Length: 201
Image (cartoon, rainbow, N blue to C red):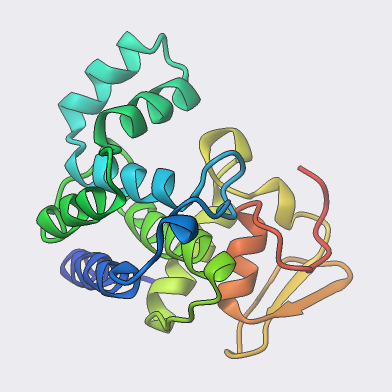
């Protein structure tokens, strides 16, 4: 499943705009809701998305060197840079970078993973729903299944089972069947709690 470069950015830009609209009316308490991304609340994830949208290839290399190649430390520093004192200001910052087409030196599918998975990291704990283009979800899922967990993917989580997307005609792997929507499979292989039984990574 391949989505063209222009379509990837169209999806990413649209998802950023959609997320800004979805979060516009949150209360202070809702902004502090723990997200599906372990250790981050909703405000943290939005700040991370601002940081991610602004990241260039050269900037990423410089930052990673400064963080001594510690990806987690680099992410935490990015949140510190972009998390404003008021959530509304962080959300406005996301709106301001929504149309940027920048990326670190990684497969462009990572932009789809960021947009969709982090969107759900935020929406599901808040009881919000959204829809994503199926082709974009499938490209993100297939990328995660090719990429090791240590590199931000979910390859090990998808091994030893046959993943079946109930909302498509597609499946991946061999072994006991694990069924769910393509979106739930993407979240599961990305390490998010979905109730689907995948091998431990």
